[in-house]
Image (cartoon, rainbow, N blue to C red):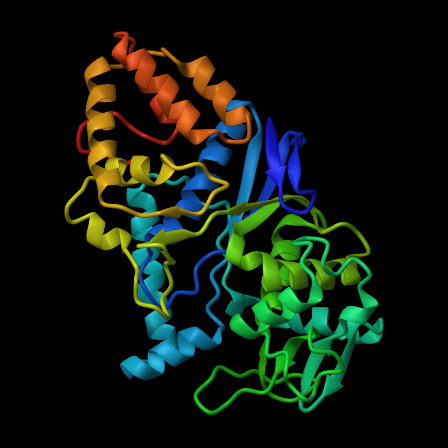
Length: 376
C-alpha cells in the first residue's frame, strides 16, 4: 500500500506491522454530524477495511473532545448543561456513523476522562523546560521544539494567520512567542474546571489529543490524521508536545482528509452552511450517502451537490442488479493500495457490473452492503 503523507508531502509506502495503530481526531459534540465529518471518517473506514483485508489487526482510536470552548458556548446559547449537550450529540454522531456502516472504533475516549493524565503530561513538560507558567496559564514553548512546523511545512506568517483563525490567540500578551500554545488555562464562569498545581482550570485543546493518543496507542502511532483544517495548529502542536515528552517520533504517517464545500465555501458551523447526515438519512438510505461521499478523490477539496446522491443511487442499483460475486475484487484492492484511489475503485466495480459480474465482495470492501435497505 502507498499513501500520501502530509509531513513528507509525497506518496510513500505504508508498511505497518501486524497490528496497525490509527488515531483520528473525532467530534467536538456540540452539533450534528455533517458531510465534512463523514468524509473524514469514511476515508479512515475504507483504509481500515483494506488493512483488515490484508490480514492486519487494526486499532483505531477516535477521541471525543468534550472539554472545549465551542461546546460550552453552544450549551450556554441553548440554556442546557454542556454535559447534556455533549451526551446528546455524541449519541447522534454514533448513530449516524453506525448507519453509514463505519467499523466501530477500537477505543473512543473522552477528554474529560483523562484530566489526571493531562496534568502529569503538563508537569513533565514544565520539569523538562518545554513549558512555562505565565498569566495564570501554562504554555508550551515552541522554541524548545526544533521540529515544530514539520507536519504542515507552513511559513510563520501563515501559521500566525491560521492560529488567529482557529483559536490559537497569537496576540495573547502572556505568551513569550505568538505561536506558543496553551497547555492549561483558567476557566471562566460556567466553564468546566478542575483543580491543578497551577490553579483551577481546564486543559488546552491540543494537549488533550496528545495524552489520549499516547495513553491508548503508545509513544509512536502508525497513522494519524483528521481533516486538513487540523494540520495547523492542532496536529503541529500535538506532535511537538508529544515528542517533547517521549523523545520519540509521535507519528509515522500523517493522512488528512479534504475539506468539503457548499457552493464553493468550506462547510463550517460558524457559517451555517452545513449538510447534516441525519437530515440526508430522512430521504436517502445510508448506503447511497456513503457512496456519494466516497466518490470524490480524497486528496482534493470538493463541493457537495445533491446530484451526487442521484449518481450514487443509480450506482447502487447497478451493483445490486449485478448480484453477489467477487468480480473486480482484485482491481478494487489494487486501486485502494494506490493511494486510496476511491473513484478508480468504484469505476472498476462499475465496469465489472456492466459486464454482468457480481460485485458484492468489492462493494463490501468499500463498506457497502448490497442487500436492499441496508447501510454499510
